[in-house]
Image (cartoon, rainbow, N blue to C red; front, side, top):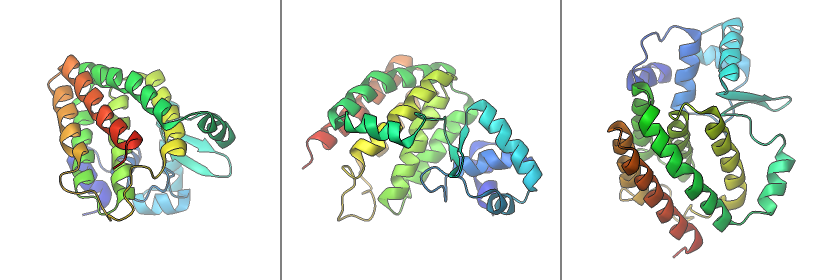
Length: 235
């Protein structure tokens, strides 16, 4: 089974032959997206089994939706357009501490989870669960982190609020520059089966699925507080 067919089944897509659906499925799978960047057009069209013309139309639609953005000379990236330049992100990162990053996350993401519980579509909840499944089977910390980022972004997408999604994308760009490597144990090849995030993510998604706004916000807050402790007070 091709990767796109597998992810289609996971999130309940009904038309796997459509170029746009194929592209969405590829992005949802997240496999092979180096730093969130899509493969070159020729390679991507071959992987999806569609023409480059069909691919360009699908890319244009996703760009219009704010699901991808293009950087001239560097490629196409998943997510909303972050701060205009890498230099801007680097400058902000130099003025930002890990503690400030966590304060910002605790201010923003519980409310994102609350709104996701109100507005999430069934296919978005299914994608959250697919992300969690991929997290649990991750073989490296890099793979785990990619699915962790995808899960948190899917929760933000479920708010149906483009501004909140853009704020999260910008926050994440700064976060990666400030905290990169601090939570990744150098002596372990992959997250342990009892890693705290597995149960915490499950609690968040269950609350969203149950349309329990207060529980979704509280679960996200507890999760981020655990991350905060491990980030600022490593053992």
